[in-house]
Length: 270
Image (cartoon, rainbow, N blue to C red; front, top):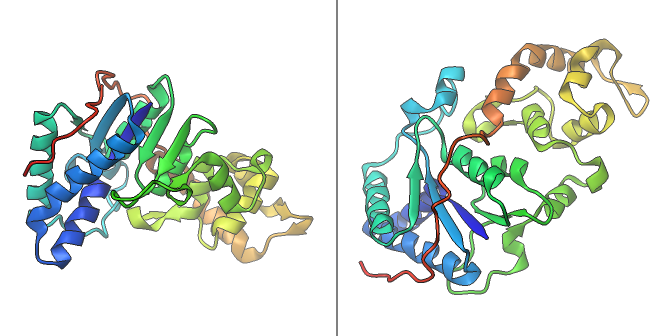
């Protein structure tokens, strides 16, 4: 089994949790304790913590300068905490990877695609939904390190499908679904007036976005033509779709090292 960690997500959670109590200096320790907990509970053969490259080096900024433009600058204390945690991981033989111009999500996607075996993605980003695979790839959300990991912490492919309210045979392609809906957290605009329900209806009927956009004036859902506003929305979206797809789709072909064997115990000393 391989566990891939969205390290920026986990460190931000630890930093802001400690900062509330005025103790951001404890964020690296909190982070390592949670890494140790997931290793101790799942006992993976392999483990890799993936970090985002610096924002200005991100290849998606070249595709769209507005990508993640709404995010605030990283606090100095958070930068310090990341550095401290990475030093600890290097000292104790935990693979910790940053690879410009890619984001942590792309590294996780490449490991997931290229790993021969079961993969657990430890992180909450909905971009990871496109990597879920029945019986092989599942997502683990945040859990209490002092408690047992219960079913509510897991998001396997089946649960993602159920969250959409459909059968696996009718499930949309996750990338195409996300392209239509967009991703407000990353400042990626999907099709205006298209939420999850409408995106699901479009893709269940037309299967692909290319099919959907082929003849917008003749689109019908359940035998009824769509409204003029919906036609305008898709007409505006059509020339943007190739760019949106480049922003949404994670890279799965980055050459990554599989020398990522996981230590089975981590000494927590700070």
